[in-house]
Image 1 (cartoon, helix red, strand yellow):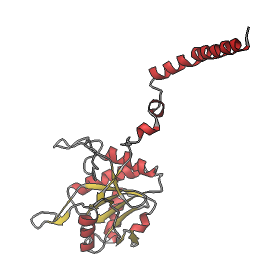
Image 2 (cartoon, one colour):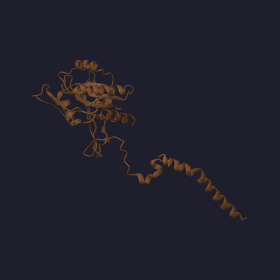
Image 3 (cartoon, one colour):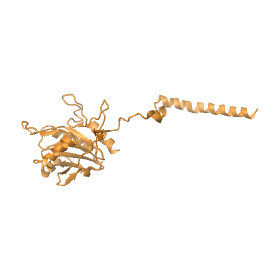
Image 4 (cartoon, helix red, strand yellow):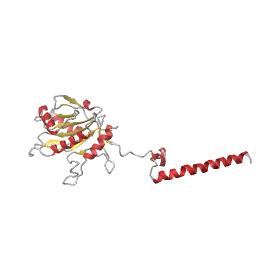
Length: 247
């Protein structure tokens, strides 16, 4: 037999052996949906794929919105600025200690979140009082003790009223204001803002591909939804805190 014939027989044998060994495995992977995206689609074909699990940056005039500079006093009488949160993921709220309605619910939800991330040294909360004349450091410290606030990165902050209102309405676009005919004397949003380690405001995408911007802070996981049919977003916030901690 000629040498070329031996070569053809060898090649045919290798092809047959490959089919016997590998084709059944490939079929099993397809049946079990164990073929990865890179197996199915080449990298070149996948350039337009957007990972919706990543959190959006809130953009103003095409630029990611960053937390503006601030300087206030916390419940321990310490001066706290945005720099104290560098390298940390944190949640922002605006509240006041004598609030009879939504603030207790918001802060119970934040304590729940605090307890979930109790071992995370890079997680914190910034609670800005919109009634700073009444909410002195001593009042804020008593409030923290009453609600079980133990995270050392959770600062309850007081300072000049006009600076706090500007920070809320302009810095975070979270509405706060005074209402003369309201028993509490104030009106404010029950939303939370989520900040990443670099000081940028982040959120997940909604069903239309737009950033949600804020997270509903009033409805608890246990309640699931309010009387108007709005679903709770505390679970969502916990998931997104974890994502940012892992970035």
